[in-house]
Image (cartoon, rainbow, N blue to C red; front, side, top):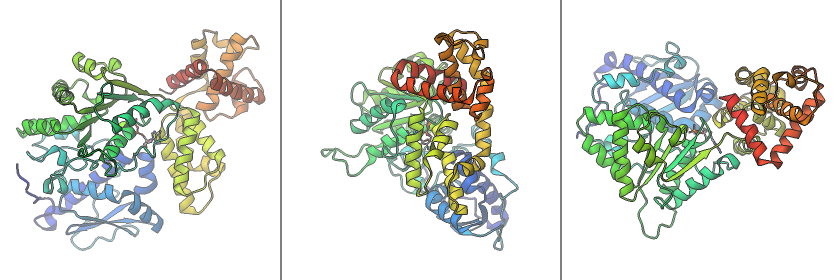
Length: 516
Ligand code: ADP
Ligand code: MG
């Protein structure tokens, strides 16, 4: 139950500290990369180098003023948080302009290129956590763990705030960017969004408890959960005299590691009590509990205790409760008995709205045709879409050049190529032919009967959406048809999708299957 804030990492003079500082820095970088994603990391953070650590201050270098300003305004909190998780003595992270390393005496610029973050990204050492000593000291209240969502057990001591001020979890680990305001609502997510809003307004209302959000990667599950938490923590909401609800948000993985840690340090009672004392418990990415029987069991009991006490549970996963195989039946049943809301794959319209909203906030003028191009090419998930747009904006800012279609193709060359690789026109033809039950050869035959012409048009439409092939190239693959035929097919299918929801769903389904 120690609240001791002393920490060995930087003690005992440089001889003890250096290697460890290097390791800390490597871990900070790799976690940063994991958390912000590859694209963002490469755009803003990769060039960052460690200059040194002086007392409670870490100094980092970036090569340009622009990068420095950007990183200061966007990642300062994250950097401090990650450094604090490494060493609770760190109070300040100073980002300056500088190239290479100017290590002050006694400090080593460890971790710079010797440990490219990409190599480390996958090695955030959970297995080590299992093998090592208690990963969080006993008695640090769960709700006081700063950045509970991020705290990677086993790698890090608890951050300073956790040990020093056992504050409640509200808002602490929530990303301010993931608010309801910044969430763009469209057909694919409107139901999930409405449910999330409802839970944020009136937690634990009958029929909405638990709220189970599911959908593919990067479609906004985490965003909605944070939005619920942020909304619940808002000070300006009139609660008719009731106190602000306490919210705990964590990923299922963190739940598991916290639980394992509690077992090791014989503090499971505290763990349970802490969890059961919150008003709203949110567990993200529940699929990671699959096969983890003890943890599932613990979660089940926590779940029941909270629901019985009239508290709200919000859970996300990549599949619906009934499709999450490997989940205990009784847990599955309980998860499915509140509100289950599906976030569908994005539509072109939603992708455009999201891009418009993000471009608007960036202050860089992005021409509509570039947004359309991106929305056509990057269909897999919003995270990638966002990352691509961020990269464009970064380039525009760095080089002071306007964003054009040409510059977009250049700047996003690698991303666009990766998308192309994912699906070929042949695959599209095969899948669509199967779906409509026509022969594959009819994709390139001269037959014009509606029964084959419509599927062919759908395949052309999907080829345009899912590959970066030009209209003439697509035409050639469909029995040497003219590019105007392809163009017509694309607009016709888009039109039909507007008119006929069933048809639209069919096309979306094929797209999803092709993309997965
Ligand atoms: P998931 O948890 O489903 O994998 P996230 O919630 O992490 O996805 O979303 C990935 C990224 O896309 C986040 O940056 C999020 O803000 C953004 N995003 C997803 N959906 C939307 C949306 N409808 N409006 C605005 N941003 C979105
Ligand atoms: Mg998520």
